[in-house]
Length: 620
Image (cartoon, rainbow, N blue to C red; front, side, top):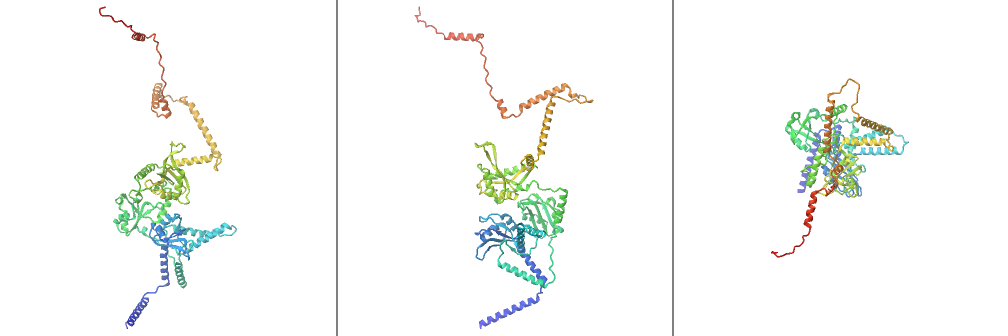
């Protein structure tokens, strides 16, 4: 009986729930096909937004696991999913997918990890492409190979150009983080697709959309791209003179005094990842933005006075830049001063942990030297040349080149690797003593930055107490221009060079002859004096003979003083301090000297022997 009662209760519950669902379906308004299509498109867009931050990793080692991959890529941002592709046998394909939450973090990981080693193997990291894009890319490659192999085959150039332009635009869109594009394709690897479950879901969605589109004769309306009107409404403020050490939170707290804020973002350089010193702040209300603009010099952040200006739209910025180009008054950082900050270690930061006091003092001294050198407007920071300090005294150029090659990208080209030496202190073999620093020149700026970031302050290279100090070198523009002119001239004069010009050699010889002739004429005319010219001109009073004699006398005195106090060379000083031979004294004749006679006679008397007197008695 108890069992029967329980069964009846369950039946009653099921019937009630069924009635409720039916009522809900009846009460709910039925969606039209257009609305259904919109909902499906929204879901697809959400999926595609997530897949924009999806990376594909190729050339993975077979020892790699999802946990090791997660640890390697988690340094640059939060991950949603990590997947390594496998075959039916369970063997690894050597390819995997990594899903980030934000596109910016995915781009950062791609920039830092592409071409870098992972478990002793270089991996290739790139944004994942859609199926259609991947197929188009392969088709274009096949067409290009056919064109190269078979020249007689007729080809329609406009079609190929269109496909190539489409692929270029798609690849540029992947690299641009801030580009707002709507993609309608699923993501796939270059070699293999994702799991079979994902493909089945996508195919079922596509079939549903096709069935509903067949019912409707009207084509789907394309939505225009979303454009924000914040700049037009006047809610966004552009800020200059932002401190380089400030963060987004610091800026937000500073600007909250005017009113509620949507966001506060500091502009960051792509390559160096340092602050540009500018920022954007978006307020909720227009009045708050106007208050910030009217603040003037009262608004400060970390000691810097902020300069608030009205944010401009993209079209206004383009027009402004085009007008500047026409006027040719565009100010550019031709001296590359932003590279001075690259590699600087601040006290209290993580990079300063374990750095010895001597290294920190040396770094401070080098920074002071940089500021002193850059006061000269001819000096600029080179983009391809590095200075490496703290090198061992026993190292030569080959060791320096090997060190740079091991700590730079694989395809980098090193033009120069040279250690500076003191040529006054020479060894027995004729090699100068090392100054413990050297210069390295690369062909590309990207390779130089990569080498600097891997070598600078690295405790594993020399020792923990003595670490390499690497920075971009400061060059003299006038010296480089003079060097380039000399090279060009030597090429024009060299008969073995392609740029040889015989007329240049002739002109140089003519100039030399003219110089020699003018020099000879001047030498001849130096002793002649004033040249007389026909006319009424008379000698002035200061040309009188007396005054001229006095002037000449004074000029001679001045020349003597100059010669006396002039700096002399080592040879001249040695000649001045040479010991002169002693002069021989003239022997005077004794015959004419009476005093000498007296002395000699007295000596004779003293030296003569007195005869002995015999003793007698006293009374005798």
